[in-house]
Image (spheres, rainbow, N blue to C red):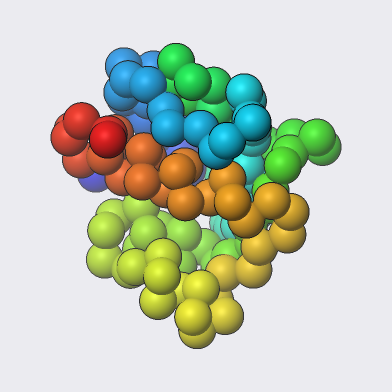
Length: 124
């Protein structure tokens, strides 16, 4: 696995997301973005990243977007665990380890699509 939040990680994930296929969008929504704030990220990596979604696909960029539909705050360890598949987002939410502000309805299709894109499966 590429070092989490490294330039190589962003480049690899950007390529994966660009070729992942169509995104299931919430009803009445044509685009949305979600910022992930990593509260205790090392100084050598970005403290946040933004996933932007359109019906034809998604993209990821380091940094935050001030006009994001949702902001997710979590620890570096939990974010790395979610990415690696060793930590479940449902468990993280139930345990209060992920804090969400904004439109929660955008998160379900985003996570479903993101996990399918990363695993190489077809998002449905």
